[in-house]
Image (tube, rainbow, N blue to C red; front, side):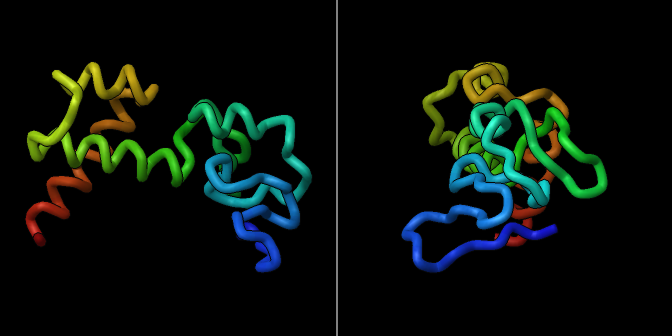
Length: 110
């Protein structure tokens, strides 16, 4: 299920689950999810229609990791190593490698 937004607000707040920008999940859980908002924001939890609640990065956090990893691979990062970057962002090796593959693909086309 997709998140549904009310355009009357200046920030994205899902009318169904109540999650807001920064703590939006991949898919809308379809019910109020205020209790999970902190864990989603802290990169510990995501909701996916086919999987339910999972301990994976949300799309927002994937973009944050992508940007940090892009900077790292282009020698513009404050992090001294990919491990330091992963620790700071709370990313697993699997999540980092997934983003790295996308970066290498994107670099090929830029």
